Length: 325
Image (cartoon, rainbow, N blue to C red; front, side, top):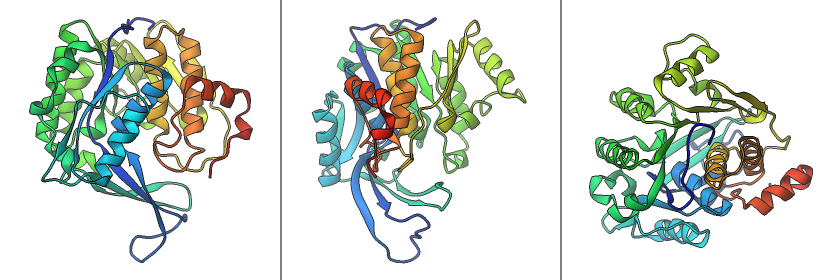
């Protein structure tokens, strides 16, 4: 990376929620009355991230918890089939795999009903950390959406300190949903993680979330002074911006017709991190990342749009031919 070396030999590791997603089929559909739903689809922000890392060809693993049920099996089998080391995923016999029910507003915004904190994912704690995976981990990715309990925050802190302690790097996607900000400890946990972050991957509105500056550029400067080495801002249909204190780049998005936005940011971040770990240059990695995010929104289902480099090459060549609604 520009100022960060992701070692090629080790694992890219993530940890957090694993769930299924079940979606309304029509925009404007309400869960306050019966309607048609589709799913279950494999989901969970860190799970989507690590699936895309595997698709791009990097060695990777995930630590998480699922229930002893078909929803859990669906997720584990999907991740395994796509190349993720799933040995760190625990099956909790007494719990149910997490779920998210999703409705889409007429303008494309989404509303979620989650069962995560009370699901198998809510059992995730320091005891689930696999020392063998930590020893092989040279890069750890944190999703802010995973910081929903004291136990998980404690586990995240341990993994971050361990990985950084042996010379590894950390990326952080704040991925903060409005429900998360109700947790009083969230700010403290986010600040802790940011202190260890090498690559910060906020969506546009999140750039200023953990900075005191009153402008985006001021927030970026503040983050870099704080010790973050790279800030990569995801701007959806407006592409992305890259900042490391000496280089500033803006990449346009690939123009597509959106079918389902869920997972696009996860695919973007995963592709960027995996490509840089494989030694790709900055501009090539950003180009692939933008393509991965754009391609993902053309698929219905959060993990259905993950892609190999060959699939991304084909998409970049002919984005208009991609339609998976």
